Length: 199
Image 1 (cartoon, rainbow, N blue to C red):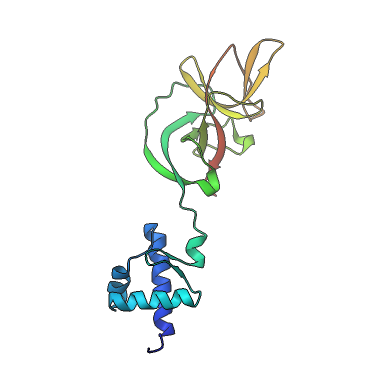
Image 2: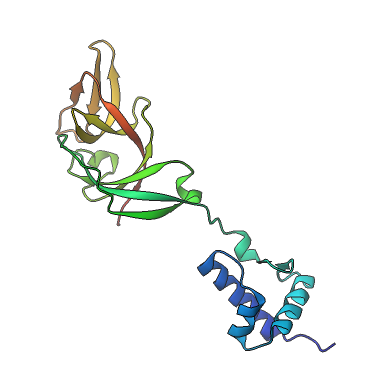
């Protein structure tokens, strides 16, 4: 049997990794053959040899490399649903602008939505006008969480506290020039867990 070309093995490896990154799965031998202008049988024989040499893991269908094994392709499809005021609460209709993918390796698993912050009331928490706030959908919060609160059909993004003495909920702006909003009750739409912003 003729010895295998290292140059061709390197090209197959590079193509397999790039294909996986673009398509979330391994290329078939026919795709490798078409890309590198070789026969399917040659592509197969090379993959078997590359597997024997430890360059790839190849089981006859899937090709795995040091690069593809590190990929985490799990994502959450998440809706961007417009803006939420960070000042006084304002009525907000939930209009989905678009869906985007959030990688679970960064954002974790869960049911999320994304809101565009507007206003200045959360600037001391690092949330600026125009930032995208990733919110985990849930109807409860711990004290100190930043929540999306619905109060009298109006929503706002504030830090959540309870004032048991006065039997009030405190929606606290993170801007020392603004006052707390005290309410008897509010509906928690979710808890902010990440901010996406331009630097």
